[in-house]
Structure formats: C-alpha cells, structure tokens
Length: 286
Ligand code: SAH
Image (cartoon, rainbow, N blue to C red):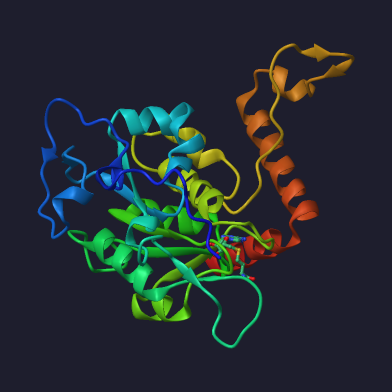
C-alpha cells in the first residue's frame, strides 16, 4: 500500500513559494481558482520564471537548489519555486494517491484522478501554450536531458514538473495533458525529485543574471557542441604535477588554440557521438 506520509503538512502549507519576494516592484496577487486554504498568503512574483513541482515530498525542495548561485538567485527573486503536495489531493481519510496496476504486476501506480486535480491546480493562471509553459514528467522513458533542452526551458516563462514515485503515473494523464517526458539518464531512480532538481539547476543557471558571468556559459561543455578543455589553478607545481607551459605564457592566441585543440581531442575520444554531430554541423555550415 501507499506510504502515508506522516509529515503531511497542514493544507495551508501545500503551495509554498520559496522565493523571497522583494519589497518593491513586480509584486502582484495572481487570480486563481484555487481554494484560499490551499494557497500561501504570500504574493507571487509577477513575471518571474517559476517552477511548480508536484511531488509527494515537498520538503525535498529547494534542496540543493537553495545553495550557492541558484539559491541566491531564488532569494533575490530571479526565479521562483512552488511545491504542490500531491498527498493533499489524495482519496479518502488516508489521502491515498496510488493503486495497484491494471492487469496485475508488482508495485503501485499514481492515480489519474489524484494527479489530475494537482495538475489542474498547478495550471491555473499559467499560459496554456506548452512552449511558454511546458508540463514535464521526470521519467526513465523520457528524452534524455541535454543542454539544448535546458536552453529551451530557460526561454519559457516557467514549467510544471511532475515527480513520479512507485511504478510511475497512469499513462492517461500523460496523454490528456500532452506532458513531455524527460529522463536524467539510463538508470532508474526511486522518484523524480532528484531528476527534477538536476533539470532545474541546468535550466535556472541559464536565466539572465543568475550566473553573473555570461562568458562562463558560452565557454562551457556542450554550449558549442564540444566538451570543455582541462582547467588548472594555483599552485603552479602541485606534488610535481605542473600546469602546461602554454597556459603560463600569457600569449592569449596560443592559449585559445591550445584550449580549442584539447576540447576537440577530449570530445573525439570520450564522446564520439558528440564529435560526429560537431563534424556534421561544420559540414552543413560550409
Ligand atoms: N517503473 C518505472 C520506473 C519508476 S521509478 C519504469 O520502469 O520506467 C519511480 C519514479 O522515479 C518515476 O515515476 C520517475 O518520476 C522517477 N525516475 C526514475 N528514474 C528516472 C530517470 N532516469 N529520469 C527521470 N526520472 C526518473
């Protein structure tokens, strides 16, 4: 049977907006069909890129996203995070969210009626156009997450993310809402929360002003279809291992050439798939 969450928060804690609103500008109360009791009384930041996470474990958020640059950006209101506790939408006294798989077999499946109520609430007041506001389900069957997807998501106005548990979700929900399935990789996690945080991290760091240094985004792995060159820092001699001479030469042209050559060599040996795609792109540009 389902694991009834003993720490189920009070209903008025269901939707938590983790971004600290600024005391000026951009604040607005958004219209909502949601019962008051399910909403926090904190106003939403109008127009800020927002992630709405449907999960049985809202306490897992913001998790690691609350640290470092993504955490600072969250506090500064450069993006916002809302968790929607799936348990609240469960059936009956025990707020059951899952049931046995039709056709038999091991495990439990998240019920479509329960998920539907949570998704309807998440979608109230957000754009219906999926390009502007994708609805995503973290799933090992999904398209593997890559930098191009993170770039696409960062250009949307926000996203709704469904984190699965047990054997996953009833298929009809995915069809009904035209949900995009995204995988973190070819392995099976126990739930979608870690995958969602990885996807959010990759996306949020591409939002304007989050990293503070746009150059580092342009240079890094995948941005130009290649893996990054090796990095070094002081001390120049560490346990007898020295930094390549060229990097200490101060000759910017030679340094750029060396980095480019390293980047190509590493991509070619480690990721023949990326290298082939890179060569094809060059050929099509000529
Ligand atoms: N029975 C499913 C696996 C369920 S794992 C199958 O064989 O495909 C439970 C939940 O963890 C999933 O619903 C999904 O939300 C999440 N999950 C597991 N592996 C994942 C991965 N590689 N990427 C993204 N989410 C994953």
